[in-house]
Image (cartoon, rainbow, N blue to C red; front, side, top):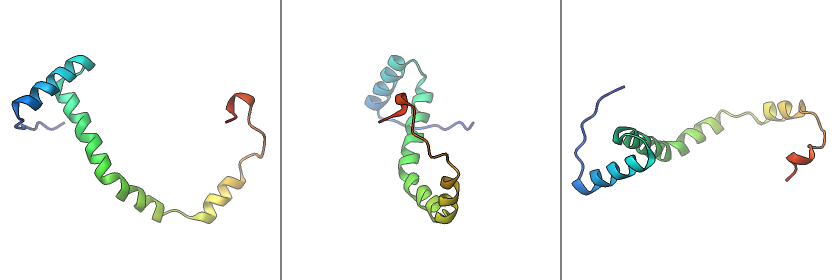
Amino acid sequence: MSLVSVELPESLHAAADELARETGVTVGQLLASALAEKVSALTGPNRLAARAARGDRARFEEALGQVADIEPEERDRL
């Protein structure tokens, strides 16, 4: 883990402190979670595009062909 010092407006710090208390986490945990969500939102599309570019339709079809062709159980039906 890394230690980061961040300056926040008092109102934002107070809101984070209240939300952290309400959800039962520390302010640090709340901020780390919020930052993780933001990083994921900003980098996610690029990561997904890179993974999609590595995809191979023929291999996908081959793997799908190995799945049994049976009706789903009643509880699994849409």
